[in-house]
Image (cartoon, rainbow, N blue to C red):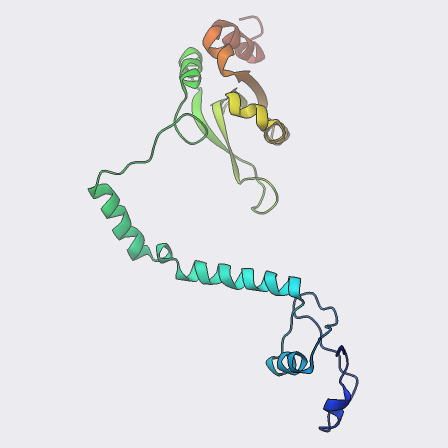
Length: 204
C-alpha cells in the first residue's frame, strides 16, 4: 500500500484527509511504501526521494568537510607554512602555465626582448561561475600592443577546444593571438620572430 495522501489510520486519530507530503529537494509528491516511513517524514518536517536524498547527503558531507578543514584557520596555515619552510620544502618548478618558463618560451622571450613579458595575466572581465577564469595567463605578451603569443607543447593537442575558447575571448578584448609549437620556436626562431614582428612592423 502506498501513502501519498493521509490514510484511514491517520483519520482514525482525528487528522484531516487530503495532505500530500512533498520532496524537500525537488518539490514532487512523495510515495511511501509503509506508514512508519510516512509518519516519520511528517514528524521531521522533511522528506526526500531516493535520488534527492543522495544529493542532500553529498551537500551535507561537503559542508562538514569544509567546516572541519583545519586549513581554514589562519593560525593553522601559518604554522604549516613555518613547518614547511623549516624542512626546506619548495614547490616543483616545471614548464607550463604558472610553473615557470619552458625552454622554447625562454628562447622566444630573449629573441623578442623590449616590452615583451612572460606569463602576463589578462583580466577576462567575466565574473566567476560563468565558464571562464577571471584571468587568462599569456605565455609571452606585449601589453602595449596587445599581442599574445602562445607556445604550445604536446599537451595542447588534446585541449584544442580550450585553446580556441581562450583565443576567442582574448580577441574579443582586442588582443591579437598567435600560436606556435615548441619545435617551431626551437628549430626556426628567426621565422617565428619575423611572423610576430610583422604584425606591428610589416616592413621590418
